[in-house]
Length: 305
Ligand code: NCD
Image 1 (cartoon, rainbow, N blue to C red):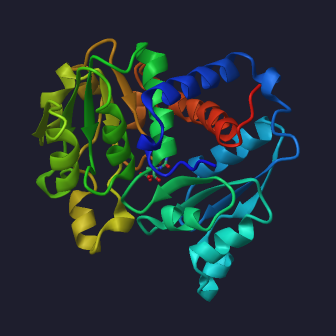
Image 2 (tube, rainbow, N blue to C red; image 1 turned 90 degrees about the horizontal axis):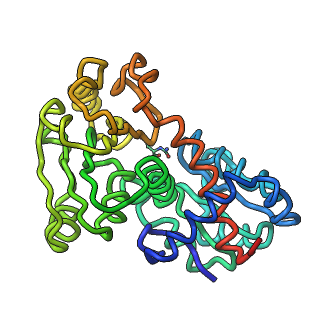
């Protein structure tokens, strides 16, 4: 039995196969409509979510399966002090697969050790968010036709943004990928990402503070929100929150075939006036998230269509 806890749990070949299935799902949805009939997905969300939880639910429903779960820690026995291990042993009796989001780094890993069903990490604290990464990879591959030979700009809260950490981890495995890391000094990528992931693998990258400087050279610009819930003090958050605002003017500096991604939710970091630009791909990215989660559920349940 396999889990998905980290984007590196799958080889590049497995990721390719997963993206091929997602692409086939996009083109032939009817073929998959009954493939999870009788199967249940449990969504265990101890932290707020809109897209991740609903896209998991939509994915399972599109496959003909059903869903159960909770959407906040207060409405589960976590409020009574139950451990994630005990919760998972219980949920294993009700469902065939589960997706867990938790504010503590490593909670899905701990849960998976006592689980008799596949566990999907749907975001653990400021650590990883592998299914967002699968979504991002599929989106980039669909828009650019490749995952190698790209300059990727990542902008905003690179310190606490788990989607950023996961995406860097995943992209360093492709040929000739370079990164432009755009953040205020206070929100730079964690040291372990810089040392253990980028430098160790000899990946070209630079760290800059001005978004304008990076615009002309990037093929993908991945915008992120400042992660308010991970700050120790509110004043610090307020000081940082509007550090970058992508506007129409700044878009003029970008290549014509560049694309903007964002894991969403957006707060202020992309002006709504940018939404009409054909290079704004963040709502298309949401749709890709459903296809890749459908492909992932099939893979972990070992169902071939
Ligand atoms: C992201 C997350 O939860 O890390 N949201 C998502 O799942 N699409 C990004 C964020 O909350 O900023």
